[in-house]
Amino acid sequence: MKLTEDSVHFSLNHVQKFYDSDFFPRLLEYDTIFANRKKVTEYLTSTEFLKIPIKSPLMMPAPKPGGGYRIVHQLDPINTLQYTALAYLVATDVEKARPPIRKSIACSYRINVDINGNFFREGNGYNEYQEKLIKLSNSQKYVLLADITDFYNQIYIHRVQNAIEGCNHSLYEASVNIEKFLMGLNNGLSQGIPVGPAASIIMAEAVLLDIDQFLLSNDIDYTRYVDDFRIFSNSKDKLKFVEHDLTEYLYVAHRLTLSSSKTEIMTSRKFKKVEINNPQNMEEKSIHSQLEKLSLRVNIASDYTFYEPMDFNELPKEGKTYIQAKAFQNLLLSIVKRKSLDLGTARHILRRTRHLRSRAIYRLVLENFDKLAPVVRDVVLYLDGVSNDKIIIAYLKLYEQIVKKSFFFKTPYVSHWLNYLFSKRKIFSESDIIKKYLNDNSTLRYSAIKAKNQRHIWWMRNKKSKYSGCGDFEKRALIYCSSILPIAERKAWIYSIPRDSTDLLEQIMIDRVLSL
Image (cartoon, rainbow, N blue to C red; front, side, top):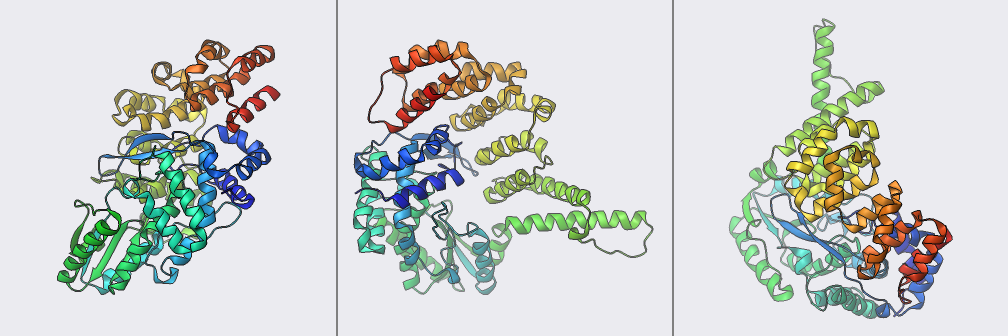
């Protein structure tokens, strides 16, 4: 099988518009890939899919909000493009086999593929999921909370192939290639799909198709968000039988299990208090609360004898900014005080404030860094997105406290993200503590990025002889960094290093450096 041209175009557009992994910074190699779209497309469409080398992905344990870790992945760039292209070829048929959108049963990531790189409809379906939870909890007395244990990492790859072929028999060849590709990523192991690429969402939803069919065949009121099932009934005993039957079906059909710590039956009244929390609604409530306080202050100051609430949309820009800032501060404070971090709300706050370029929560984020470690990707993108040199200098002591005292900073995954941030901005070298950390602990890859950004020619000269002993990711970082060498020295080194004639990415990165 060879990839089609439209699938490769989609794959390139997807990574350029969105991401290659939801858990890692985008790799530096993609700039070269996007500058060589024609050459990359020709390679991927003319080479047999399974003859393209599968490289070992980057894998790290990332902290979870309730404690513990999960393994997350970032694939080699060419493998990412392959995987995304294959997902594009099967995605529409997977969506057709899912329960209808109007029923709000499978709410997560409804698929709507377009050539511009979009896999999904606008939004991730979480608001629809929350609305269905409210509706069901208002009409039924009890709810069964049922989550599959370590879902992505426990999926049997052969079940992925079965599920995709079951959507449309014409997808047999694509499904077999997906199975063999995933087995290659896992070094022959038959269990687990990568956590991070958007393509894995398509594979996971395919696996869940028959579980939806099983529940629907038993005339059960439920909704789910990925593998988090919320099943409702007026009979507690009925839910006990549902838990029994679902446990049996998951094991027999998929060798999957329900998480004992996350599976329980509770009253709908209690459920509404502990679980239903739409981030958008929480933001609006917080803004409304701030408006009430401001209205009271204004009315009291004006000696008004009656209270008239303000309309947020009628406020001047400065007033809106003040209200939003206080709302985000209060909302973030409320979630970091909880025992377990609310991922959805934390991400919503960080992404909204980044979009608004608001520094209202800047100090709070740094002071609560360890609590926010499960969303470190959004933390770092927020800090990077709203910072300038003046702001970083003003808060440098708090950054130093993270380096000195944060537990999670010592873990490779969180350290990886802060290496990304510190390596991008020269101003962090104003801190002896951060500078020493980068010199002593930074990976070769981020050291190379830092050296290029700061034009540390001495560093590159010191590493040239280490090239042969490096892995693929590190080799490409050295090629990238070599652009700072004088032309004659750069060319002499490039022509001296051993090359892999089958590695397209290495070739185009070398060509780009030589052309500078």
